[in-house]
Image (cartoon, rainbow, N blue to C red; front, side, top):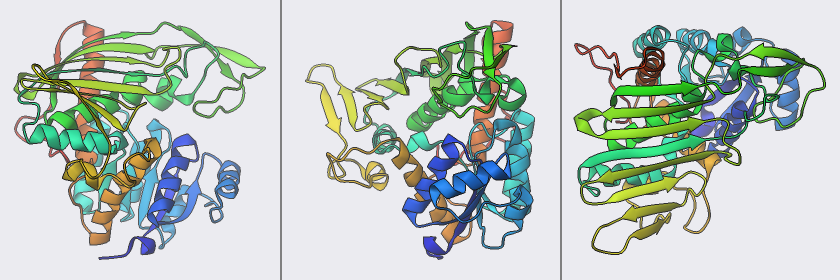
Amino acid sequence: MRPLNEIGAAVVGTGFIGVVHVEALRRLGVQVHGVVGSSHDRAAARSRELGLPRAYESFEAMLADPRVDVVHVTSPNHLHHQHASAALTAYKHVVCEKPLAMTPAESAELLHVAEQSGRVHAVNFNLRFYPICQHVHGLIREGGLGDVRLVTGRYLQDWLLLDTDWNWRLDPKLGGDLRAVADIGSHWMDLTSFLVGKRITEVMADLATFIKTRYEPAGPVATFATERAAKTVAREISTEDSATILLHYEDGARGALTVSQISPGRKNSLAFEIDGSSAAAAWDAEHPDDLWIGHRGRPNELLMRDPAILNQEGRRATGLPGGHAEGYADTFKALYAAVYGAIAEGKPGAGYPTFADGHDEMLVCDAVARSSRERRWVEVARQKESPVRLGSR
């Protein structure tokens, strides 16, 4: 088994999320040999900011570096298929941001390439790795809530509230036909499927675009940027600002989700409540160390994250003692600890979301888009004769 400090990585993409990947890898002790950006100048500037080695001249130069064992794909969505496929073909292990691809056909092809390669492949569904979420997964699996009946919640943000807010995700050619659902709703749907151990089988979705014209700045804009450009161009918008989705899970559980990128004051509010036949559990990512547990006939509970009282799954994802808050950035470290454990062993393992999970979420999102267009319930189109093998369900 290789020590983590002997495993080399490179990151494709130099935006907000690419930096989070770099910092999490460093905390694990993984050697980050460089980054690739949309331009060499931008990548070089980011490398200087992060104290990294000189940026690669090109994506191809990064793939040719024999020190790089793992490629992290954090480029815009339309490049995920190209970058992940090339990295796997070059015998690199791959961690890819979600959504895995632009279409289910692309994600199915990536899954096939990944499985044929024998390399470790993972999708960055990092929110599974909050310690409390890992604890809830184990709690439900062990019957701690009884039979799961109802899964409700939201994922709300406000960073695209104004018509002057702009990001590449607003352009369907770069981000895909779904925006809010693919960007953040996919996290909620993957997370709740993981928690309850049941896939989403059918959806009824209503997508809404409230801001039909936005003003694109003349220059590049970083994700979550707050500066306003002096010169802009009016652009018609077709992707959704918000979504309300009814869900059916396997074995009959029902769900309801609200997704929005235009909710004032909500910065990153992912919340769920899971109601079972004997108890309920509720959690909000903006208060990540607290789990509410509901009962009938006795007092409700508030469980605070503490490795001394979490179950085995929760403890495995915990890096700090109780009372020392763990948050968003820590989920990346916990996810990569699982992924790089498999890489150290030299073969795909268990305990992390794979390209199979990424492809399955593409199928769910495709059903969401069709449901909204056709204004009806739509079944998730899985191949019944060869079910997708999900990495951590």
